[in-house]
Image 1 (spheres, rainbow, N blue to C red):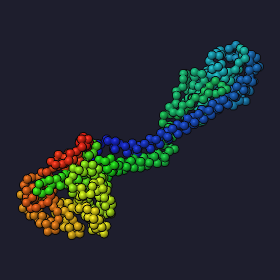
Image 2 (image 1 turned 180 degrees about the horizontal axis):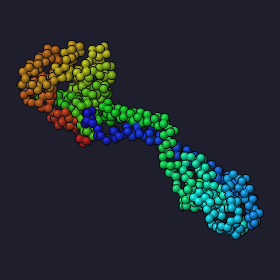
Image 3 (image 1 turned 30 degrees about the horizontal axis):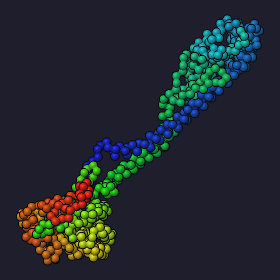
Image 4 (image 1 turned 180 degrees about the vertical axis):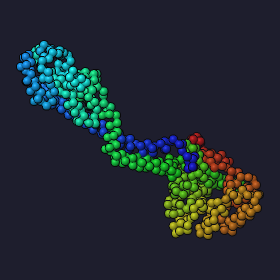
Length: 528
């Protein structure tokens, strides 16, 4: 029920939303940081692969230069060209050995001179490059062989795999790099393998040479991105964490504020959920309805009809009772004015006010607007002062009460005898009626002390020439006692319970001698 201490569900949206709002900046920030890191790693991986390709291109340029220099000598006797083979090996820093072949047979090398070994062009990618895992001289040691041919003759130059490893390890020290030639590839461990190379966990790239038939595969391991984010963005991560806490805290504060009793009352006021209920007041003698007390009820969209003791005290405490009472007076006037013919002249309409209404003269305008809905003399507006807040006799308050009386508005002290200021109000303000609290009425025929207090109040009102209204009359014994002691008006469940406007109008129309409702008005009243 509204304005109670009932806790919301543990996992309601009000509980989860602040966490979501708090985590959102962190998640978004991490997503941006991740995206930025991925871009940086991708760019770094491409730059590294491009640099390795450039370095291997330079090595192959040396091999190509040596092989092209020796190509014209292919087919000549080995003893005539061996010196030239050794000269090219000495002249080029990356060339480990040179060889010549004729009719797919290697017949002369810079290392051994005369030689006899078959040369299979299919071992070479595009007939040009072969990445092999060692030869008879250095088994298990990687070699990169460059081949060039003209007809059936050609030259071969070889580079040691350690030069390739230097490029892989130094240029891409923290990268996962592999150089691939045809179906063979080698990583930074220096082992030549056959088949497709593994794809890097992040920022995987492949960069191919535009001059030689090889490619370099780059990228980083699975933890590289997290390591880079931790090393580069610790301050930003801390800032995101602080922003998340602030955002979550602000959201929680806003939700608590939006769902606070004050906000809930304001929402209900704007939605028109506060309705007037009417409890009839009967006069002595014939117990005819002489008026009504207007009671505020809250018809909540989910909780239904809310008890006034759950929201009226808080409305008074928060100062919202003034706006709520103003709306109540307007709703009352609009509900009763079209059917004013059902009301006897001088029909009393009582509305509760508190100390908050007495701080300025705005109450005069509210009362004037209310009375303008009715013909002069049709209704008598009575303001009932409650004592939950003390009314100070300031010049503004005294002027307000004086002008209310000039307007024809009457003043009643509600729940008289229960508040410590009741007697002070009689001394300070001009009062027209006393309303005897129901706690004294309930003791009629029972508690002798309370009954003596009740008799004293009745005697006091007679001496001060004040009207009397007894509240909470529920039994015939109470009714008859009050009647015998000259109480002017009675109010309670014995006569009628509080009712909405449509029920009140139907009850007024049903009284003998009352004017009949128009045929089109009754259905409208029933619809409320």
